[in-house]
Amino acid sequence: MTTDLQFHGAHLDAERITATLDHLLQRNLALAEQGERGTPVCIWGLHGIGKTALVQEFAARQDPPWKIAYCAPAQFEEMGDLHGLPTRVDPDPTVAGNEYTTFLPPDWVPTEEGPGILLIDDINRADDRILRGLMQLLQNFEMFSWSLPPKWQIVATANPEGGDYSVTPMDDAMLTRMLHLTMEFDVKAWAAWAVRAGVDPRGIDFVLTYPEVVTGRRSTPRSLCQFFSSIREIPDLRAELGLVSVLAQACLDEITVTSFVAYVRDHLQTLIQPQEILGAKSFASIRKRLKALATGKDGERRVDRLATICTRLYLHLAREEYTPEPKHAKNLVSFMLVEDLPQDLRFMLHRDLVALKRPALTEMLEDSRLATLILAGI
Image (cartoon, rainbow, N blue to C red; front, side, top):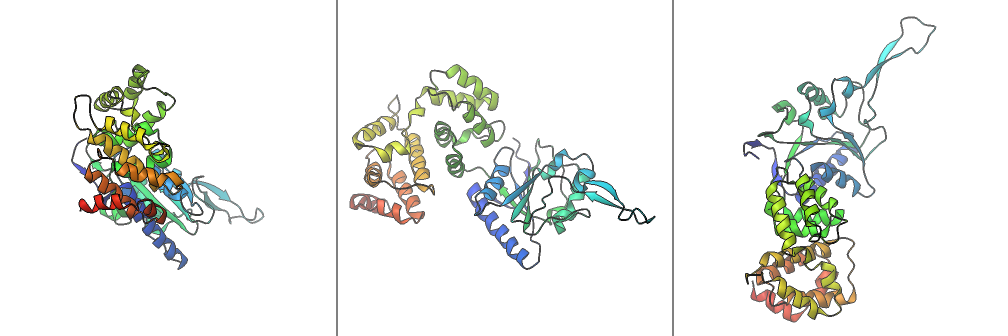
């Protein structure tokens, strides 16, 4: 991927994009209550980073869920695809000359009152003529032939200009009709989404261990999820390594394929899962496994494995649906007291859990031995 790419707006990870989008769209809703229209939002980013999925998930997570309408203007061949088709109306057949022409809106145009989002996906992959036709929609939330219902808002996605992207440049008149944000890949934010989306835990562990494999070419968050879905029903990846390699090559670039094959051969798919740590009947077995994972086959320190385990544990505890069980607190503290856990990982895990500001989690961390270790690292 070349570096001469042109983005717009602040560069944010998925979690900050979501928080900013929430602020902007809630503000737009408040304006709608006053009879005013808000300003559309455009989310820029590399292909496959998850822009479209982020908007769809944002709408679905509202309470109650917002409606969403999808529009892909790159598929439009003529202005009729945007305006709709004309039809002749004759209000009174007995009267000559009172006929007029009206337009039948396309079926993707919403008709019910919102809250809702009209998602204009890959807006700058549309033909220049279609882009010019969208300007009125972005400005007034309407075309001459139809209008968005009340409480509907517009969110667009776009790929950057430059590099190898086949996009149509947008001039200043169009850019200034929208508020702009640029979405960047952040491994922790992606992993949080992947946990919610039910992505294969082995895939999440792989990306957390080797975040550099997300190159932005063929190995994107989207293509990685495609690959992880294709191997989900393979219980033993090592036993089916030939098939796994073929499936990886179907989705990913060569470097990522090589890294994943090495990951499987190195038994990293056996990393300890959060449920095993928290639900352990005897923590001695977990401590023994952590000690083995902390050291490579040549005796080298494998902090990357421990960092992945810590991140996965945090993401599990941070889930909204997580409910503590009686033995979880003891096992969590036991994990954080393990001697093989580097002090910086212990401190960051403790800090991130406290930052969630959930009384149940804060109570789980109340241990004098752990407090002493944390204070020693400040």
